[in-house]
Image (cartoon, rainbow, N blue to C red; front, top):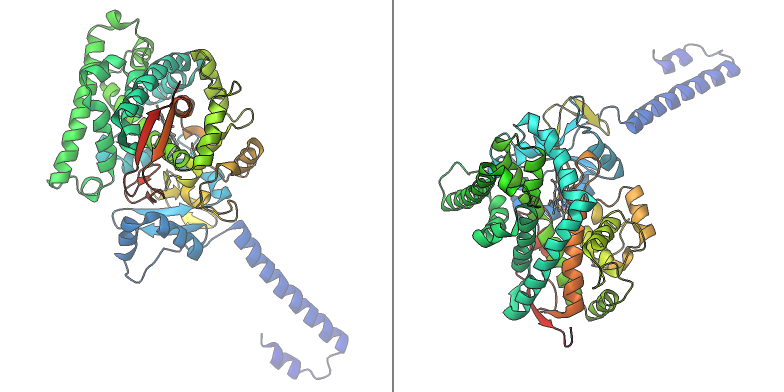
Length: 505
Ligand code: HEM
């Protein structure tokens, strides 16, 4: 109805009625507006905004290849907490912020009714690394979860691993001191894998196959190269080299596992994780080498850079190194020199659970995890759903970025600066409650190696700063290289360090 014409055609309309009409009109307008905004609040239906550059189609993949971290920060600034990213080879829908955190980590509860699937997304993203069908041994998958939880994270197992780690730390750091100058990230990879191989497969495997630790370094470094991640089918030199490296790792794992199966009884007294698995569940020989290939990969991918960045920051800041040194030499340090393996394991478990005040070294670890957070984690939509009003069809790959969350200036002042003092027990509790800090994931797929790795890192750092002086040969640490990083990134250029045993240590 044309209201102007209607009023014009009724010049004698009483003013009270006119007022009521206007009021009714206003009310209707307000109702319509409130309906719209409550829909937006409930996020009923919105259109996904795709990240765009001046060069359609090729622009986003090119930018991502060059500096993915800058792209993500820019896209969030332009498009908010939900946006699409088309990389041609793969499309992602990024969901960011605390609400996304809650949904992303809890929407896979392990049932077929879950909205999101961790396994499907990981399977699709790592096909070139682990082959098709990472979770194809369905009967084994649930057993494997339980075995990992008890076998890697229970107190008695951790006490055993701690003795193994202790003996490795002593030897490795003495080796560092003999080397003079060393490539810090490369050496941290050797130390990490030496310890992980000893805990998971036995130290004899390190002796028989000394190349295994180094092979993992190459395996991770090559994993995200386009020639590997997207064109592994093409017989390039890079693809062939990657296949050789992976083939050799698998060959070693299969040899070790075959020998164990051949004499289960004879090996039953061993204490490594492989033997723990075989003593408990010997029935899955076909799944075993893939199980170890992936766990050793998970053990390498973030541990090495956490260890090395933390050492690099402490070594490049004299005052910080002095404070750390005095702390690790004090009687009150949970990793003090005289402590025995079960006590150290208990201290590691307590640190991982954020019990007790945070010693400086642990603040440094938390800050390394914040500053160098992984670029993104992935899940696949299992049944049509929506987030923040944006429909997400089945098969969509959803990504959540710890990096973006950890660099949010409204939460972390001077977010690009390494400042361990921003962490304390209450600060960490608040960040965790507000879902603004996520180094080890959360929910069903949270890191199952967190306790073990806390002990590994703490033993390495504590021994290093208690007994050695460490310096780096540069004034300013290089920036992290996020292009091609699968977890916590390595630096853009090598960091060389010198390690000297302290007088009287
Ligand atoms: C500082 C070192 C480490 C960090 C920061 C880290 C971080 C993470 C994160 C964030 C996730 C979850 C990813 C997601 O939700 O998509 C994860 C999963 C996992 N991590 Fe770690 N991790 C570390 C070391 C380790 C180690 C040493 C092991 C084993 C020895 C390990 C074993 C695993 C496994 C098996 C999963 C998969 C859990 C599942 O399938 O449900 N991690 N890790």
